[in-house]
Image (cartoon, rainbow over all chains, first blue to last red; front, side, top):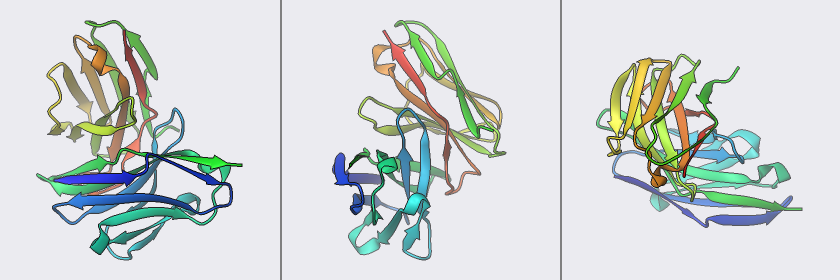
Length: 115
Length: 113
């Protein structure tokens, strides 16, 4: 079974400050991990993904995440927040179960940027 | 050009009605999905299809019936709508059944009154 827990349903930071969104996962198979962003009234867009190889993954819009197997974590960071980063962020874990990919999402974290 | 498109964007209907949501992808992908996002933003997979064949059915009520006329289309038909069906429904596609990025449509907000 797979599951994702995002710590904090709402995170608020000042413009220019560090963004840290936390994600912990549970997986019975080698995990593939994703971060998606959802802007208001839009679909989800992939920010970055970890499959295999380098554990520090860089994505779009200056975001990056580090896969830490020992901590079962995949936290999302950005050094300097921008107003346009305000959105809902979803961490997801995927694995091949019964011959097919199944993506399981966390409950989401709403990121608010203060001017 | 929109990669994954859904129609309609908004759907308001009364309990007991039957409605359909259409999804099309122009990415040449083999696999398509339906997700339901509830009022608390929680996203859960409902179905996945690969080359028109049903792969995943996540214990969704029989009132929900997906149909894939070809691998570029995956429609969702809902019979006897209930209040609890109100949600945003997202269609998505990926290259194949394996672990690949999923591309999401803009969503269809269904409101059942």
